[in-house]
Length: 200
Length: 200
DNA sequence: GATTTGACAAACCGACCGGTCGGTATGGCG
DNA sequence: CGCCATACCGACCGGTCGGTTTGTCAAATC
Image 1: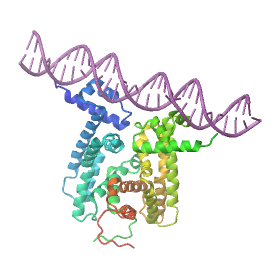
Image 2: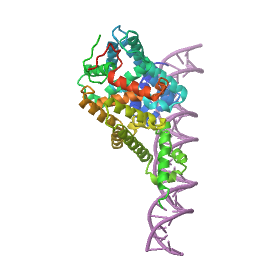
Image 3: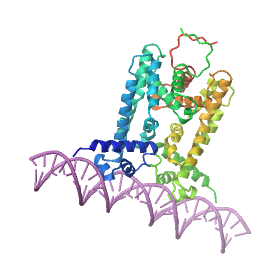
Image 4: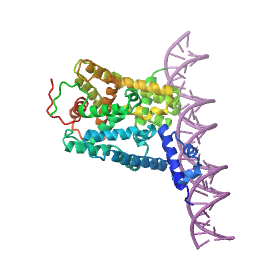
C-alpha cells in the first residue's frame, strides 16, 4: 500500500488548481477533476471527503507555498522599496496560472461557511498581505514611510500590484523591471506631477 | 394590459441584485429570485428568457445607473483631486449592497461566454474606470498629474478606492471625509514619508 | 499462504435546478 | 359580447452532479 499515494493526491490537487483557475467553483465538476488527474471519482473520494474539502486543501497548499516563496523574497536586509521590489519580482516570476490562484480567494470566498472562509482569509493574508505588511511596518519604523496603518497600506500595495499585473497592463510594459518600478514609484510617491520636490 | 409590468420586472431585477450580491451565481436559484420578488418561476420566465439573461439585464441596469451617478459627480469644473474626491463621495454615499454590485463584475466575469463577457466589461468600465480616466486625463493635461497612461492610472485609483472601502478599512476611519482624504493623498502623493516637500 | 488493508475502478442513486408547457385571469378593443 | 394579447401560475421534466456503494487487485502483515 501507500506507494504512489502522494503522487495521486498531488496530481488531484494540481488538476483541481488548474480547473478552478479556469472555471468557477460550481462549473468545475469532481468528475472533471478526476478525469484531468487521470483517476476516477471513486479514487478522488477516497482521498477527499468532499468537493469543498478538496478545494480547501488545494487552496491551503497553494497559499502555503506562496507564503514561503514571498517570505524568502523579502527576507534580505534592504530598504523598504527594495524589499517590496523583491516581492513584486517574486510574484512576476510565477507562471500566470500560479498567480491567478491568489485571485481565487477573492472570487470564491463567499461560497463557504464562516469557518472555512475565515481559514482561507487567514491563509491568504499570511501568504501575501502580511508579508508586505511586515516590510511596510519596518519602513514606517525606519522613517521611509509616513506613519499610518501598516495593514491598510499593505492592502493598498497589493491592490496596486494586482492592477499592474492585469492583462491591459501587460501591454503597457516592455519588461518586468519597468513594471516593478512603476508600482513602487506610484506607491511611494504618488501620481501627482513633481513640482520640484526637495528631499532632505 | 401592461399595468404593473414595470413593477414586476423591476421587482425581479431588484430581488436578483440582492441575491446575487449575497451568493454566487450558481448558488442563487431562479426559484429563489422568483420567491424573493413575490412571483412564480413561470412569471419570471415570461419576462426573461434565461437565468443568464436575467443576470445580465440586472447588471447592465445597475451599471448604467452608476455610470450616470458617477458622471454627474465629476461633472463640475474643479481641480483633479477635487473631482476625484466627488467621485469617491458619490461611491461612499451608496448603500453597501449597491456598492457591492460593482464587485460582481469581477467575481462573475468568467462564467459567461465571450460576447456577454465583453459587454459586461464595457459597461463596467463605462460606469467607473472611464469616469475616473477622463478626470485623470484632464489632470495630466493640466499638469496636476505626471504624464502617464490615464487608463492604467484610473484602474490604480479605483483599486485604491476599493481597498479603502473594505470592511477592515471601515474600522480605520471615523467619517467619509477622512476616508476620501486618505485615498486622495495616497494616490497623489504616495506613502513615502515627507522630508520637507517644496511645492512650487 | 491466508488474511487484512488500502488504493482505486465502475456503476449507481437521490436531490436539485434550469427550463417548459398547458392553462387561467385580466383587460383593452372593435 | 367576442376576440385576442399579455401577465402570470404551478406542475412537471430532463439532465446534471455530488456523493455512495460495491467490487477488484495488489501489497503488506502474520
